[in-house]
Amino acid sequence: MKILLVEDEPKVSAFIRRGLEEENFEVEVAYDGHFGRQLALSRTYDLVILDVILPNISGFDVLRAIRAQDQQIPVLMLTALGTTTDKLQGFDGGADDYLVKPFDFQELLARVRALTRRRGGETKGAVLTLADLTLDTAAKTVTRGGQPIKLTAREFGLLELFMRHKGRVLSRAEIAENSWEDAFDSGSNVIDVYVNYLRNKVDKSFPKKLIHTVVGMGYVMREEE
Image (cartoon, rainbow, N blue to C red):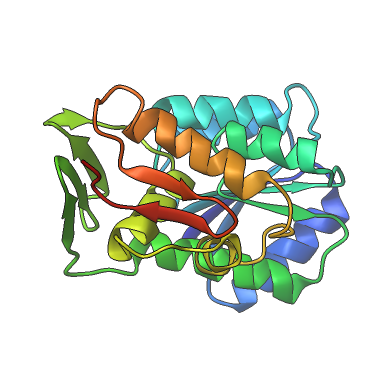
């Protein structure tokens, strides 16, 4: 697994790189936003670990550039900014996970393993369908009514969770446990906001809605007449 680490603090980057290399990951480091963006757009990685506050251009700007080219590569944001608003900005930009400094390396490692496992874990794959919506777990593609739908890795994982449990109400705690690896407090409104992002892509342009809110309980994916 090849990882791009974009982190301007030498002690932090050395700490992360050493730990990941001891776990047999290959790590390339960029110490500013410009170089990080250049590497991310010109080379192939299995994961990007991206600090928010960087010289020259911010991590959010690097993230936007990555997502303009690649919707699927997992991106883990690192930052000292840990409010729900800050996290939403990262998730809205296409981040898949968000880790607040200071952090324990074992927590970082757990997030890295979860994101890389999600990206490459299925060898045979499966095609999941509901009404005119199709999700291919191997090809990492989604179509509805024959139209391709572009999703971030986070959105893809959330949609896959819903489709694997279609017809079953999933609580916010279950969604957090299965899709976010404790990336934030499941009692916050981040899950609700992220479900809304998914709805805007999967349901908004189509007459039949598939993602439904069950008040006081959570969300369910199903066909309704």
